[in-house]
Amino acid sequence: MRGRLSHWIALGFGSGLSPVAPGTVGTLWAWLVFVVADPLLSPAHWAIVLAAGFLIGIWACERTARDLGVADHGAVVWDEIVAFWLVLLFAPGGFGAQLAAFVLFRFFDIVKPPPIRHYDAKLKNGFGTMLDDLMAAFCTLLVLALFRAGFGGAAG
Image 1 (tube, rainbow, N blue to C red):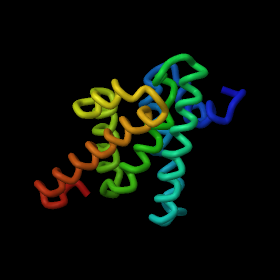
Image 2 (tube, rainbow, N blue to C red):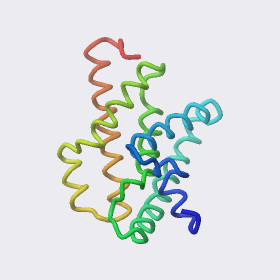
Image 3 (cartoon, one colour):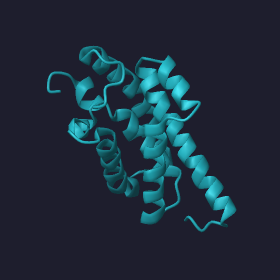
Image 4 (cartoon, one colour):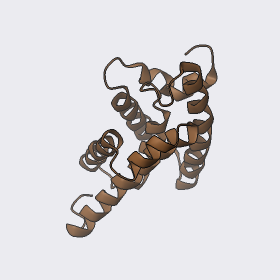
């Protein structure tokens, strides 16, 4: 990890090196960073962070995967981090709603229902690594929106 900036980024600044559930630990790290950074960043700043994070993630995840010899190594968690920041940005506020978003996001990221599974299997590069988590974020936000619509905003 020390040798390359791409490894630092792709491995979530060390959060992906957890021996147990590195994707979950990376997502928890993303949540912590979001809680600290959100009061300091406007929606426009978040848009820049997310766009830059996605583009940098394509490079960092691809390079790290190539160096590790595995297309989407479990320790590569930058994709979870950027995608979960997106979820938290649009999810209802409050700890309960954020916890629900966390559980839903981890579910979609682990289970990879269609069409996430299709793209995860077909795109074995940095873009594919980032895309499948972006799709998991979309599914998470969709379920949260449907829940809010069905229960009159009770989730937020």
